[in-house]
Amino acid sequence: MNPELLANPKAERIRRVAELANAKARRRTGHFLVEGPQSVREAVACCPDSVRDLYVQANDAADAGNGRTAGQDDSAHTAASVRSRIVETALEAGIYVHEAMPEVMSRISSNTQGIAAVVETERLLANGGSVSWPDGADDTRDAGDAGSTMIAAFWQVRDPGNAGTVIRSADAAGCAAVVFVDDCVDVFNPKVVRSTAGSLFHVPVLSMETEEFFAWMSGHGCPVIAADIYGTAENRPQSLPRLLRDGSLGIAAKAVLFGNEARGLPEEILAQAQRIVSIPIYGKAESLNLATSAAVMLFSMAMSSHIGTM
Amino acid sequence: MNPELLANPKAERIRRVAELANAKARRRTGHFLVEGPQSVREAVACCPDSVRDLYVQANDAADAGNGRTAGQDDSAHTAASVRSRIVETALEAGIYVHEAMPEVMSRISSNTQGIAAVVETERLLANGGSVSWPDGADDTRDAGDAGSTMIAAFWQVRDPGNAGTVIRSADAAGCAAVVFVDDCVDVFNPKVVRSTAGSLFHVPVLSMETEEFFAWMSGHGCPVIAADIYGTAENRPQSLPRLLRDGSLGIAAKAVLFGNEARGLPEEILAQAQRIVSIPIYGKAESLNLATSAAVMLFSMAMSSHIGTM
Image (cartoon, rainbow over all chains, first blue to last red; front, side, top):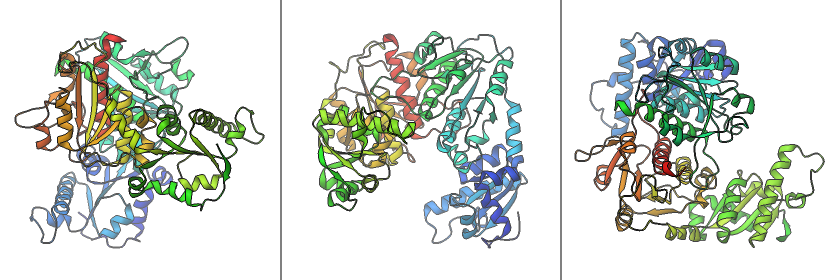
């Protein structure tokens, strides 16, 4: 714990932290900003070695275990005690914790809710090496095999909110990794980080060029299933519920690839996929948005492959 | 078609249209604003009798069928011809169309993309009477019966973006109606309308008090399935994939009820539900957000009940 209370919002250190809102500063420093109790808690719990500094609103740490301070209302008290618990975990993990005045926290960003962390991008990205592949990934297994590996891949996802939401859905569906393919939004953009609600620290998130992605998948004998409603002349989309029912998705490893919010997947990408799958529309809506498609597709497949193990 | 080109952004008529961004003005007039080509097109196509006035950026109508105007780029040309087609359909339906200068469109709202409509709330809400219930809704039917009626209900949904997104998902999943229960965001809030991407005009959206909702459902012999991860001491949640697999959701009518974004569903509401269902989390994410839960739950159930009919 830094014994010095940070009180000057104009301090050079604080300016540098606030600057992490910009991609340029993130690239130069190799750091990014994590805001709010949920995300900071998950960063501290799951990736403590990547967390360089933690900034917490002053007086919170002093409150820990001291019960209610007069004049604090319930929700302020709850928020303060949530932050205290995160600080305790961080100190145990040897993370450098700085107490700061509210105006300093506001200068860091308007989304800290009293707590923020500076995290190294490098080590987090290195997690990609830790994707666990099943042995003999090209073998067909029982649909009931929960040991199957699912990768969620997104080609040219551009909207930060979407990018964060799909990382969260992929995490919840038990995906082994998320891959951002080609020119996507920066995964360390603060809005992406916030929208993942901590999932950025649960599942490896990798960035790759298109060829690199397909080579990686084929190297692991992992078929790529493109989510697309049109398909190509040679490869028409198959309906998701039919595939779920006939058991042909019960394979040891699979990657599901989603397209750009506005343009979907272009022909040349679809041509490289082993299968094309579409979600049927039962009502009058024209289409589903990316976040909805990803949630439905990934969860349907996850529920289908876990059904035997519940 | 109004022969007069609307050129004055300060005109009283335009001020009144712009005012529909406020709930108070919507309540007083019984009108709401629909912005952008996708939503306006669906309003004109599906609910022409509810559309009072259509405002379109000037010169668009003159372009119809005249091919490219020199200096227009492709996307501007495409946008203009999309608007022209909507105007044609509107004129055929007898809707009053006003051409307006760009500054007038900007005064109406910053989200018109060159086209907006004023629509009556009353007639749209009256669509609720048109929900089609299966005969003998309390009979158990084959899971393959596509004639089953599914209602999507949301208790105290507060975020406009969420509210719109769930209406769109419910539409795509083929729900017969959407019900906003208790104190929800105003369904005619411009952000809700935009987020539905036209689905507001495809599926009846009703607002009800809690008791009214449960009485309506029980009057149609329609069980209420609450989506909740905790459940109550008497009624533990059942896992969604297990329910899908055992066929017990293959009933003629069902309503799925989702809770508030932050608080979920309170005990007293859960106690009134016939069943409680939860989506399993396979990864480390704590939970799913409302829009994701609704998409996964509604689509899983829809795919499961349509599987025999593809």
